[in-house]
Image (cartoon, rainbow, N blue to C red; front, side, top):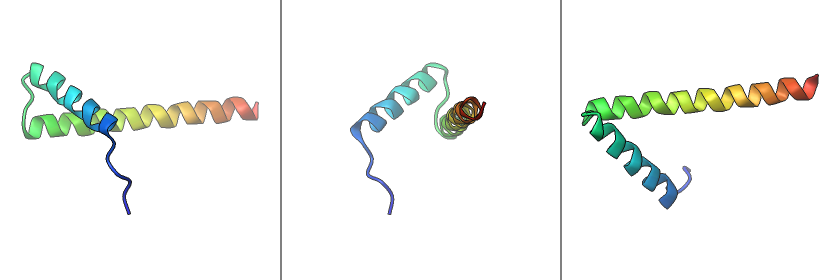
Length: 58
């Protein structure tokens, strides 16, 4: 079962879509841009976790 969508997530999505619209990205282009941005965010989170684990093991 998936977690429920939170209002904060929707607000962030709307904000992201507005910013992409300002760059003339709409439709599938906006979707692809959101996907790439989410992958970047997840990669950054994983890198932060990796760094913290490495610091802890030192």
